[in-house]
Amino acid sequence: MPAGRAWPDLLVGHESSDDAAVFRLNATQALVATTDFFTPIVDDPYDFGRIAATNAISDVYAMGARPILALALLGVPLGKLPTEVVQRIVAGGHDVCAAAGVPIGGGHSIDSPEPLYGLVALGLVDPAKVKRNDRAQPGDVLILGKGLGIGIMSAALKKGELRPKAYAQMLESAIQLNTPGVLLAEMAGVHAMTDVTGYGLLGHLLEICRGSKLEARVSFDAVPILSAARHLAEAGYATGASDRNWTGYGEAVVCPADWPAWRRKVLSDPQTSGGLLVACDAATAPAVLDVFRDEGFRHATMIGTLGAGDPRVMMT
Image (cartoon, rainbow, N blue to C red):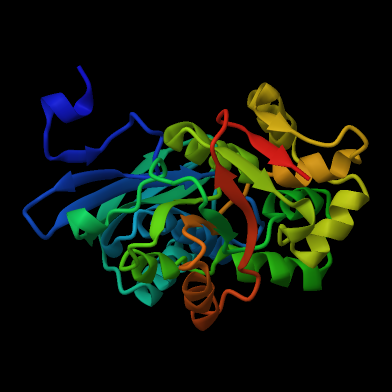
């Protein structure tokens, strides 16, 4: 039975592959609930905790909600990881939550073969201002809030070939909270929103296209790419997940035949704690960009448009 019929107050469930569940509490409040956790993508335990917590909270922002509470999820290989390392992971998550104004009210830990960390994240939003990923409209423009390349940089890090300056660039992006989501919820001209994470830019854009039954046209030259990631991509660095993502897109993504392979790998690069992807009317776009820039998102830019057509992405 469709979620809406069984539970009329479940405003967003699994049916649209959205970022979080949304449950209406009353006429002016809806609860946003999500969870995310993963194994380390960096060596420093404190940085791992910060990245994982930022990534989990991002799904709340992507629905237009303000985070209010988190629960920690921790997996530790008992007897194999020093207590100090575990404490640093947890401290990283705590500090990000504190920056977001979110208490960690508890959580759960398990014995696991390798470290795991993340959060259950809860938020509140006006039911009338929820930003789904399937409500884009023809003529909307697409705005991306962060530069791409986290997965590529992580791949270089695993090989011991990521320079300190590049690591700092990756970390700066990965721990930047997607706070613009709360402000964008107040804009009627913002029709759809999601955050770019494991399926890459193209995968999450396809979710918008399929849910909204629209075709996207995106200019590669307009897509923001972290400078270190671009150099690494051109040199052949990529994650295995980027190839799996690309295969999963199938014929729903159309690119110029003469494109170098690295461009495809950037667009399918899995982002850990990536940026918001916003579909808004053209008149609202300047105000959306102002919000991003006021919140410190210097890479935010318009990357394309949405229009009538088959649910797919046309790259130029």
